[in-house]
Amino acid sequence: MELLFKFEQWKFRDNNEQKYKEKTNKFLKKRCCNHNINLFCIFVAEIEFAKYTSIESATLITTNNGLPFIEKIKKNYK
Image: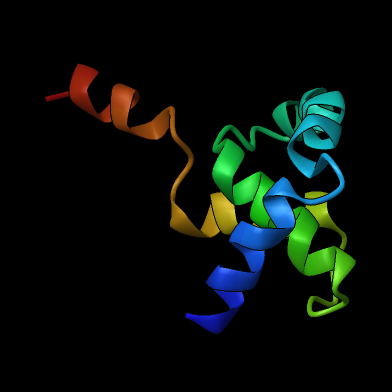
């Protein structure tokens, strides 16, 4: 919970959300479509809590938790 609290504070400091918007396309090219996850990965990478870059972390999380377009494909085959 403490990490999430620090994340919320970080989001609004130094215009970090706006900085993320400049990097959005890099995340979307890797099919990382959850902007909240992407922003959190940037935060974790900046505080050096992760051993991966922000884009690598977001890609791993997205892949591990299921790509967003898979649900649409599953519905078509039912």
